[in-house]
Image (cartoon, rainbow, N blue to C red):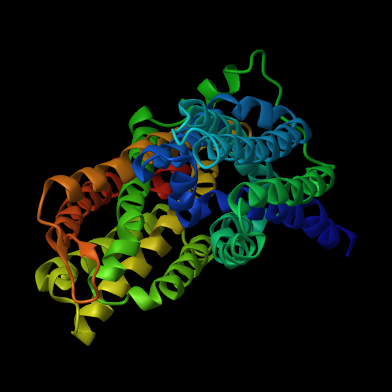
Length: 441
Protein backbone atom coordinates (compact mmCIF):
# COMPACT_ATOMS: atom_id res chain seq x y z
CA UNK A 1 0.00 0.00 0.00
CA UNK A 2 2.82 2.38 0.88
CA UNK A 3 4.52 1.71 -2.45
CA UNK A 4 1.25 2.43 -4.30
CA UNK A 5 0.86 5.71 -2.40
CA UNK A 6 4.46 6.66 -3.23
CA UNK A 7 3.79 6.07 -6.93
CA UNK A 8 1.23 8.85 -6.81
CA UNK A 9 2.71 11.16 -4.18
CA UNK A 10 6.32 10.93 -5.39
CA UNK A 11 5.66 10.29 -9.07
CA UNK A 12 2.31 11.05 -10.70
CA UNK A 13 1.06 14.04 -8.66
CA UNK A 14 4.31 16.09 -8.87
CA UNK A 15 4.56 15.25 -12.58
CA UNK A 16 1.06 16.60 -13.15
CA UNK A 17 1.79 19.75 -11.12
CA UNK A 18 4.86 20.43 -13.26
CA UNK A 19 3.29 19.58 -16.61
CA UNK A 20 -0.03 21.33 -15.95
CA UNK A 21 1.98 24.49 -15.31
CA UNK A 22 4.43 24.44 -18.21
CA UNK A 23 1.80 23.16 -20.67
CA UNK A 24 0.15 26.58 -20.60
CA UNK A 25 2.83 27.71 -23.08
CA UNK A 26 0.33 26.51 -25.70
CA UNK A 27 -2.14 29.18 -24.60
CA UNK A 28 0.01 31.78 -26.40
CA UNK A 29 -2.34 32.04 -29.39
CA UNK A 30 -5.10 33.22 -27.02
CA UNK A 31 -3.39 36.48 -26.17
CA UNK A 32 -0.68 37.01 -28.80
CA UNK A 33 -2.85 39.45 -30.77
CA UNK A 34 -3.72 41.35 -27.59
CA UNK A 35 -0.04 41.62 -26.67
CA UNK A 36 0.78 42.84 -30.18
CA UNK A 37 -1.93 45.51 -30.01
CA UNK A 38 -0.93 46.59 -26.50
CA UNK A 39 2.78 47.10 -27.26
CA UNK A 40 2.31 48.35 -30.84
CA UNK A 41 3.85 45.54 -32.88
CA UNK A 42 2.42 43.18 -35.50
CA UNK A 43 1.14 39.75 -34.50
CA UNK A 44 3.83 38.23 -36.73
CA UNK A 45 6.53 39.95 -34.68
CA UNK A 46 5.16 38.73 -31.35
CA UNK A 47 4.64 35.17 -32.67
CA UNK A 48 8.38 34.64 -32.59
CA UNK A 49 8.21 34.59 -28.78
CA UNK A 50 6.32 31.28 -28.95
CA UNK A 51 8.68 29.87 -31.57
CA UNK A 52 11.67 30.77 -29.40
CA UNK A 53 9.99 29.19 -26.34
CA UNK A 54 9.60 25.86 -28.15
CA UNK A 55 13.12 26.10 -29.61
CA UNK A 56 14.73 26.68 -26.22
CA UNK A 57 12.50 24.02 -24.67
CA UNK A 58 14.07 21.45 -26.97
CA UNK A 59 17.61 22.79 -26.77
CA UNK A 60 17.62 23.14 -22.98
CA UNK A 61 16.32 19.57 -22.71
CA UNK A 62 19.15 18.44 -25.00
CA UNK A 63 21.91 20.29 -23.14
CA UNK A 64 20.57 19.88 -19.59
CA UNK A 65 19.53 16.24 -19.92
CA UNK A 66 22.55 15.18 -17.87
CA UNK A 67 21.53 17.55 -15.06
CA UNK A 68 18.09 15.89 -15.00
CA UNK A 69 19.76 12.46 -15.10
CA UNK A 70 21.98 13.29 -12.12
CA UNK A 71 19.65 15.30 -9.89
CA UNK A 72 15.90 15.71 -10.53
CA UNK A 73 15.55 18.03 -7.52
CA UNK A 74 18.06 20.46 -9.00
CA UNK A 75 16.47 20.27 -12.45
CA UNK A 76 12.89 20.66 -11.17
CA UNK A 77 13.97 23.70 -9.09
CA UNK A 78 15.63 25.23 -12.18
CA UNK A 79 12.37 24.61 -14.05
CA UNK A 80 10.28 26.25 -11.33
CA UNK A 81 12.42 29.37 -11.05
CA UNK A 82 12.93 29.85 -14.81
CA UNK A 83 9.30 29.29 -15.79
CA UNK A 84 7.88 31.61 -13.12
CA UNK A 85 10.60 34.26 -13.63
CA UNK A 86 10.12 34.13 -17.41
CA UNK A 87 6.38 34.59 -17.06
CA UNK A 88 6.75 37.49 -14.63
CA UNK A 89 9.40 39.05 -16.87
CA UNK A 90 7.07 38.76 -19.85
CA UNK A 91 4.44 40.64 -17.86
CA UNK A 92 6.95 43.37 -17.02
CA UNK A 93 7.98 43.93 -20.64
CA UNK A 94 4.35 43.95 -21.78
CA UNK A 95 3.73 46.67 -19.18
CA UNK A 96 6.88 48.50 -20.30
CA UNK A 97 5.92 48.32 -23.99
CA UNK A 98 2.32 49.30 -23.30
CA UNK A 99 3.40 52.22 -21.13
CA UNK A 100 5.56 53.49 -23.99
CA UNK A 101 3.02 52.88 -26.76
CA UNK A 102 -0.31 53.48 -25.03
CA UNK A 103 0.63 56.24 -22.61
CA UNK A 104 3.90 57.58 -24.00
CA UNK A 105 4.92 58.91 -27.37
CA UNK A 106 2.76 56.44 -29.27
CA UNK A 107 5.77 54.61 -30.69
CA UNK A 108 6.47 50.94 -30.16
CA UNK A 109 9.48 50.09 -28.01
CA UNK A 110 11.81 47.53 -29.59
CA UNK A 111 13.23 46.90 -26.11
CA UNK A 112 9.85 45.57 -24.95
CA UNK A 113 9.70 43.12 -27.85
CA UNK A 114 13.25 41.90 -27.24
CA UNK A 115 12.44 41.58 -23.52
CA UNK A 116 9.42 39.39 -24.33
CA UNK A 117 11.60 37.24 -26.61
CA UNK A 118 14.15 36.79 -23.83
CA UNK A 119 11.64 36.17 -21.03
CA UNK A 120 8.96 34.11 -22.79
CA UNK A 121 11.32 32.57 -25.32
CA UNK A 122 14.64 31.91 -23.58
CA UNK A 123 14.06 32.00 -19.78
CA UNK A 124 10.68 30.27 -19.89
CA UNK A 125 12.07 27.95 -22.57
CA UNK A 126 14.75 26.69 -20.17
CA UNK A 127 12.04 26.14 -17.55
CA UNK A 128 9.94 24.26 -20.10
CA UNK A 129 12.76 21.93 -21.14
CA UNK A 130 13.93 21.00 -17.65
CA UNK A 131 10.36 20.86 -16.33
CA UNK A 132 9.25 18.60 -19.15
CA UNK A 133 12.11 16.13 -18.62
CA UNK A 134 12.35 16.05 -14.83
CA UNK A 135 9.37 13.77 -13.99
CA UNK A 136 9.50 11.44 -17.02
CA UNK A 137 12.19 8.99 -15.96
CA UNK A 138 10.89 9.07 -12.38
CA UNK A 139 7.45 7.99 -13.58
CA UNK A 140 8.88 5.14 -15.66
CA UNK A 141 10.79 3.91 -12.61
CA UNK A 142 7.68 3.99 -10.40
CA UNK A 143 5.41 2.39 -13.02
CA UNK A 144 7.77 -0.23 -14.48
CA UNK A 145 4.98 -2.46 -15.82
CA UNK A 146 2.95 0.40 -17.30
CA UNK A 147 5.56 2.92 -18.40
CA UNK A 148 3.44 4.16 -21.28
CA UNK A 149 0.43 4.81 -19.09
CA UNK A 150 2.57 6.65 -16.55
CA UNK A 151 4.38 8.92 -19.00
CA UNK A 152 1.15 9.38 -20.95
CA UNK A 153 -0.56 10.60 -17.78
CA UNK A 154 2.05 13.29 -17.15
CA UNK A 155 2.44 14.35 -20.76
CA UNK A 156 -1.36 14.42 -21.06
CA UNK A 157 -1.23 17.05 -18.32
CA UNK A 158 0.98 19.12 -20.62
CA UNK A 159 -1.56 18.77 -23.42
CA UNK A 160 -4.62 19.30 -21.22
CA UNK A 161 -3.20 22.47 -19.68
CA UNK A 162 -4.41 24.53 -22.63
CA UNK A 163 -7.99 23.25 -22.34
CA UNK A 164 -8.07 23.95 -18.59
CA UNK A 165 -6.19 27.26 -18.52
CA UNK A 166 -7.67 28.90 -21.64
CA UNK A 167 -11.12 29.75 -20.19
CA UNK A 168 -9.51 30.86 -16.92
CA UNK A 169 -7.14 33.19 -18.76
CA UNK A 170 -9.99 34.55 -20.88
CA UNK A 171 -12.03 35.31 -17.75
CA UNK A 172 -9.01 37.01 -16.14
CA UNK A 173 -8.45 39.22 -19.18
CA UNK A 174 -12.10 40.30 -19.12
CA UNK A 175 -12.15 41.07 -15.39
CA UNK A 176 -8.76 42.74 -14.98
CA UNK A 177 -9.68 45.62 -17.30
CA UNK A 178 -7.08 48.06 -18.63
CA UNK A 179 -3.65 46.48 -18.52
CA UNK A 180 -5.18 43.09 -17.82
CA UNK A 181 -2.75 41.36 -20.14
CA UNK A 182 0.37 42.13 -18.07
CA UNK A 183 -1.46 41.77 -14.76
CA UNK A 184 -2.52 38.27 -15.81
CA UNK A 185 1.12 37.29 -16.34
CA UNK A 186 2.06 38.49 -12.83
CA UNK A 187 -0.78 36.52 -11.23
CA UNK A 188 -0.08 33.35 -13.22
CA UNK A 189 3.64 33.56 -12.45
CA UNK A 190 2.84 33.42 -8.73
CA UNK A 191 0.28 30.59 -9.10
CA UNK A 192 2.55 28.43 -11.26
CA UNK A 193 5.53 29.03 -9.01
CA UNK A 194 3.58 27.58 -6.07
CA UNK A 195 2.31 24.61 -8.11
CA UNK A 196 5.73 23.78 -9.54
CA UNK A 197 7.53 24.28 -6.23
CA UNK A 198 5.18 21.81 -4.53
CA UNK A 199 5.84 19.39 -7.40
CA UNK A 200 9.57 19.96 -6.96
CA UNK A 201 9.36 19.13 -3.24
CA UNK A 202 7.34 15.96 -3.80
CA UNK A 203 9.20 14.51 -6.80
CA UNK A 204 11.48 11.58 -5.92
CA UNK A 205 12.79 8.40 -7.52
CA UNK A 206 12.14 4.97 -5.91
CA UNK A 207 14.50 4.32 -3.00
CA UNK A 208 15.76 1.06 -4.55
CA UNK A 209 16.88 2.67 -7.82
CA UNK A 210 20.65 3.06 -8.21
CA UNK A 211 21.95 5.19 -11.06
CA UNK A 212 24.57 3.49 -13.29
CA UNK A 213 28.06 4.87 -12.69
CA UNK A 214 30.06 6.25 -15.64
CA UNK A 215 33.46 7.91 -15.89
CA UNK A 216 32.14 10.98 -17.67
CA UNK A 217 28.78 12.55 -18.31
CA UNK A 218 28.85 11.61 -22.00
CA UNK A 219 30.18 8.09 -21.61
CA UNK A 220 26.83 6.63 -20.62
CA UNK A 221 25.00 8.28 -23.53
CA UNK A 222 27.55 7.19 -26.14
CA UNK A 223 27.73 3.63 -24.84
CA UNK A 224 23.95 3.39 -24.70
CA UNK A 225 23.44 4.67 -28.25
CA UNK A 226 25.99 2.12 -29.50
CA UNK A 227 23.65 -0.68 -28.47
CA UNK A 228 21.96 -0.34 -31.84
CA UNK A 229 22.96 0.90 -35.30
CA UNK A 230 22.88 4.69 -35.29
CA UNK A 231 20.37 4.74 -38.16
CA UNK A 232 17.73 3.38 -35.78
CA UNK A 233 18.08 6.41 -33.48
CA UNK A 234 18.20 8.77 -36.49
CA UNK A 235 14.90 7.24 -37.64
CA UNK A 236 13.29 7.87 -34.24
CA UNK A 237 14.55 11.48 -34.19
CA UNK A 238 13.37 12.22 -37.73
CA UNK A 239 9.90 10.71 -37.40
CA UNK A 240 9.45 12.57 -34.10
CA UNK A 241 10.52 15.81 -35.81
CA UNK A 242 8.18 15.28 -38.76
CA UNK A 243 5.20 14.46 -36.54
CA UNK A 244 5.68 17.69 -34.56
CA UNK A 245 6.28 19.78 -37.69
CA UNK A 246 3.10 18.52 -39.36
CA UNK A 247 1.11 18.88 -36.15
CA UNK A 248 2.23 22.47 -35.60
CA UNK A 249 1.62 23.32 -39.27
CA UNK A 250 -2.04 22.31 -39.02
CA UNK A 251 -2.62 23.49 -35.44
CA UNK A 252 -1.22 26.94 -36.27
CA UNK A 253 -3.84 27.30 -39.02
CA UNK A 254 -6.63 25.56 -37.10
CA UNK A 255 -8.48 28.73 -36.09
CA UNK A 256 -8.49 30.13 -39.65
CA UNK A 257 -9.54 26.78 -41.13
CA UNK A 258 -12.48 26.67 -38.73
CA UNK A 259 -13.48 30.17 -39.85
CA UNK A 260 -13.03 29.15 -43.48
CA UNK A 261 -15.60 26.33 -43.20
CA UNK A 262 -18.14 28.64 -41.54
CA UNK A 263 -17.75 27.63 -37.90
CA UNK A 264 -16.27 30.83 -36.47
CA UNK A 265 -18.94 30.87 -33.75
CA UNK A 266 -17.73 27.48 -32.54
CA UNK A 267 -13.99 28.22 -32.74
CA UNK A 268 -13.55 28.24 -28.94
CA UNK A 269 -15.41 24.96 -28.51
CA UNK A 270 -13.48 23.29 -31.33
CA UNK A 271 -10.19 24.52 -29.84
CA UNK A 272 -11.13 22.96 -26.49
CA UNK A 273 -12.15 19.67 -28.12
CA UNK A 274 -8.90 19.55 -30.12
CA UNK A 275 -6.95 20.13 -26.88
CA UNK A 276 -8.84 17.23 -25.31
CA UNK A 277 -7.90 15.03 -28.29
CA UNK A 278 -4.29 16.20 -27.88
CA UNK A 279 -4.30 15.15 -24.22
CA UNK A 280 -6.30 11.98 -24.94
CA UNK A 281 -3.82 10.97 -27.63
CA UNK A 282 -0.96 11.36 -25.17
CA UNK A 283 -2.63 9.09 -22.65
CA UNK A 284 -4.48 6.69 -24.96
CA UNK A 285 -1.75 5.93 -27.50
CA UNK A 286 0.89 5.44 -24.79
CA UNK A 287 -1.34 3.18 -22.68
CA UNK A 288 -2.18 1.17 -25.81
CA UNK A 289 1.54 0.84 -26.59
CA UNK A 290 2.08 -0.92 -23.23
CA UNK A 291 0.14 -3.88 -24.67
CA UNK A 292 2.15 -4.10 -27.91
CA UNK A 293 5.38 -6.01 -28.53
CA UNK A 294 6.83 -3.06 -30.41
CA UNK A 295 5.92 0.52 -29.42
CA UNK A 296 6.92 1.69 -32.87
CA UNK A 297 3.63 0.16 -34.07
CA UNK A 298 1.87 3.15 -32.48
CA UNK A 299 3.81 5.56 -34.69
CA UNK A 300 2.87 3.57 -37.77
CA UNK A 301 -0.77 3.83 -36.73
CA UNK A 302 -0.50 7.59 -36.07
CA UNK A 303 1.04 8.22 -39.49
CA UNK A 304 -1.44 5.99 -41.35
CA UNK A 305 -4.43 7.72 -39.72
CA UNK A 306 -2.96 11.17 -40.39
CA UNK A 307 -2.29 10.33 -44.05
CA UNK A 308 -5.75 8.80 -44.53
CA UNK A 309 -7.71 11.77 -43.16
CA UNK A 310 -5.44 14.30 -44.90
CA UNK A 311 -6.01 12.56 -48.23
CA UNK A 312 -9.78 12.53 -47.64
CA UNK A 313 -9.84 16.30 -47.06
CA UNK A 314 -7.56 16.87 -50.06
CA UNK A 315 -9.62 14.64 -52.35
CA UNK A 316 -12.91 16.27 -51.36
CA UNK A 317 -11.40 19.79 -51.14
CA UNK A 318 -13.04 19.93 -47.74
CA UNK A 319 -11.54 23.25 -46.70
CA UNK A 320 -12.39 25.02 -49.96
CA UNK A 321 -15.90 23.57 -50.29
CA UNK A 322 -16.69 22.82 -46.63
CA UNK A 323 -18.86 25.81 -45.77
CA UNK A 324 -22.48 24.67 -45.91
CA UNK A 325 -21.67 20.96 -46.39
CA UNK A 326 -22.14 18.91 -43.24
CA UNK A 327 -20.19 15.88 -44.49
CA UNK A 328 -17.18 17.94 -45.60
CA UNK A 329 -17.18 19.83 -42.29
CA UNK A 330 -17.11 16.46 -40.49
CA UNK A 331 -14.09 15.40 -42.60
CA UNK A 332 -12.20 18.61 -41.79
CA UNK A 333 -12.97 18.43 -38.06
CA UNK A 334 -12.00 14.74 -38.00
CA UNK A 335 -8.65 15.65 -39.55
CA UNK A 336 -8.05 18.38 -36.93
CA UNK A 337 -8.89 16.03 -34.07
CA UNK A 338 -6.89 13.07 -35.44
CA UNK A 339 -3.80 15.20 -36.05
CA UNK A 340 -4.06 16.63 -32.52
CA UNK A 341 -4.35 13.13 -31.06
CA UNK A 342 -1.38 11.88 -33.10
CA UNK A 343 0.64 14.97 -32.23
CA UNK A 344 0.12 14.27 -28.53
CA UNK A 345 0.65 10.52 -28.88
CA UNK A 346 3.98 11.14 -30.60
CA UNK A 347 5.24 12.98 -27.52
CA UNK A 348 4.13 10.48 -24.91
CA UNK A 349 5.57 7.45 -26.72
CA UNK A 350 9.06 8.83 -27.34
CA UNK A 351 10.54 8.26 -23.84
CA UNK A 352 9.11 4.75 -23.57
CA UNK A 353 10.19 3.84 -27.12
CA UNK A 354 13.70 5.05 -26.29
CA UNK A 355 13.73 3.13 -23.00
CA UNK A 356 12.68 -0.07 -24.81
CA UNK A 357 15.55 0.34 -27.28
CA UNK A 358 18.26 1.77 -25.01
CA UNK A 359 17.31 0.94 -21.42
CA UNK A 360 16.76 3.22 -18.42
CA UNK A 361 20.38 4.05 -17.55
CA UNK A 362 20.70 7.32 -19.49
CA UNK A 363 17.10 7.77 -20.59
CA UNK A 364 16.74 11.39 -19.39
CA UNK A 365 19.83 12.47 -21.33
CA UNK A 366 18.85 10.55 -24.48
CA UNK A 367 15.25 11.79 -24.24
CA UNK A 368 16.61 15.32 -23.84
CA UNK A 369 18.74 15.01 -26.99
CA UNK A 370 15.70 13.67 -28.86
CA UNK A 371 13.64 16.68 -27.77
CA UNK A 372 15.97 18.82 -29.90
CA UNK A 373 13.64 17.64 -32.71
CA UNK A 374 10.91 19.62 -30.94
CA UNK A 375 13.18 22.67 -30.92
CA UNK A 376 13.69 22.66 -34.67
CA UNK A 377 10.08 21.75 -35.38
CA UNK A 378 9.02 24.72 -33.26
CA UNK A 379 10.89 26.98 -35.68
CA UNK A 380 9.80 25.24 -38.89
CA UNK A 381 6.22 24.00 -38.39
CA UNK A 382 4.37 27.28 -37.86
CA UNK A 383 6.63 29.26 -40.16
CA UNK A 384 6.32 26.73 -43.00
CA UNK A 385 2.52 26.80 -42.84
CA UNK A 386 2.44 30.62 -42.66
CA UNK A 387 4.76 30.89 -45.68
CA UNK A 388 2.57 28.54 -47.74
CA UNK A 389 -0.62 30.40 -46.84
CA UNK A 390 0.91 33.81 -47.54
CA UNK A 391 2.51 32.86 -50.86
CA UNK A 392 -0.02 30.51 -52.46
CA UNK A 393 -3.74 30.71 -53.15
CA UNK A 394 -5.72 33.90 -52.67
CA UNK A 395 -7.23 35.63 -49.66
CA UNK A 396 -10.98 36.17 -49.98
CA UNK A 397 -13.75 37.38 -47.68
CA UNK A 398 -16.09 34.48 -46.88
CA UNK A 399 -19.82 34.59 -46.16
CA UNK A 400 -19.17 35.33 -42.47
CA UNK A 401 -16.96 38.30 -43.33
CA UNK A 402 -13.59 36.73 -42.50
CA UNK A 403 -10.53 37.09 -44.71
CA UNK A 404 -9.39 33.54 -45.44
CA UNK A 405 -7.25 31.63 -47.95
CA UNK A 406 -8.97 28.25 -48.59
CA UNK A 407 -6.53 27.20 -51.35
CA UNK A 408 -3.53 28.10 -49.19
CA UNK A 409 -4.80 25.94 -46.33
CA UNK A 410 -5.31 23.05 -48.75
CA UNK A 411 -1.72 23.49 -49.98
CA UNK A 412 -0.47 23.13 -46.40
CA UNK A 413 -2.12 19.70 -46.38
CA UNK A 414 -0.27 18.62 -49.53
CA UNK A 415 3.02 19.26 -47.76
CA UNK A 416 2.00 17.59 -44.49
CA UNK A 417 0.65 14.55 -46.37
CA UNK A 418 4.01 14.12 -48.11
CA UNK A 419 5.90 14.52 -44.82
CA UNK A 420 3.65 12.00 -43.06
CA UNK A 421 4.45 9.52 -45.86
CA UNK A 422 8.18 10.05 -45.27
CA UNK A 423 7.68 9.52 -41.52
CA UNK A 424 5.79 6.27 -42.18
CA UNK A 425 8.63 4.99 -44.37
CA UNK A 426 11.13 5.85 -41.62
CA UNK A 427 9.01 4.01 -39.08
CA UNK A 428 8.73 0.96 -41.34
CA UNK A 429 12.29 0.67 -42.62
CA UNK A 430 14.73 2.64 -40.46
CA UNK A 431 13.63 2.04 -36.85
CA UNK A 432 14.45 -1.54 -35.95
CA UNK A 433 11.60 -3.74 -34.67
CA UNK A 434 11.83 -4.62 -30.97
CA UNK A 435 11.94 -8.38 -31.59
CA UNK A 436 15.27 -7.90 -33.43
CA UNK A 437 16.62 -5.75 -30.62
CA UNK A 438 15.62 -8.31 -27.99
CA UNK A 439 17.09 -11.16 -30.01
CA UNK A 440 20.52 -9.48 -29.87
CA UNK A 441 20.44 -8.66 -26.14
